[in-house]
Image 1 (cartoon, rainbow, N blue to C red):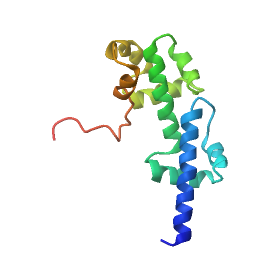
Image 2 (image 1 turned 90 degrees about the vertical axis):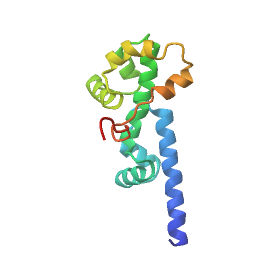
Image 3 (image 1 turned 30 degrees about the vertical axis):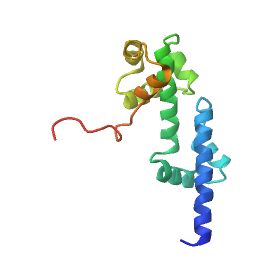
Image 4 (image 1 turned 60 degrees about the vertical axis):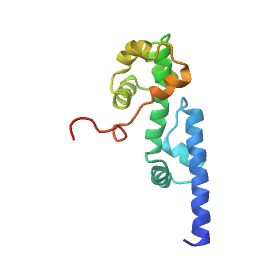
Length: 146
C-alpha cells in the first residue's frame, strides 16, 4: 500500500468515525445517507460502501439500530405510548418503526413494552441497556440442534 493510499484510508476512516458519531448524536433527527455523505465530503455510494466495510452494516441500518436501542429504553420506562416513542426517536412512520423493531428485537414494540417492565425490574439502567441490546439476525447465535 502506497503512502498516499494509506493516508487516504486513514482520512476515510476518520470521516466514517465522524459520520458514526453524528448518527449516535443526532439519531432523532431526519438523517439520510445523502446528507451524511455531504457532511463527510463523500458521495453517498462511497460512504455506504466504506461504512459497511468499516462497521459491518450500512449507515441506514446503523441509524435504525441506534433508534431502536433508544426506543427500547423509552418503552422500558413505560410512560410513553408506542406512537410517541416512534416519533421521539426520529422515525416518521409507525409501520416502518414497528417492522424494524420487530426485526431487531424479535417482538413488536407493544409486546416489548408490556414484557420489558418485568424483565429488567430492579436492574440498573446501564445493565438493562446491555442486557436488552438489539441483535440483528445475522449476529444472533445459532440455536437448535447442531
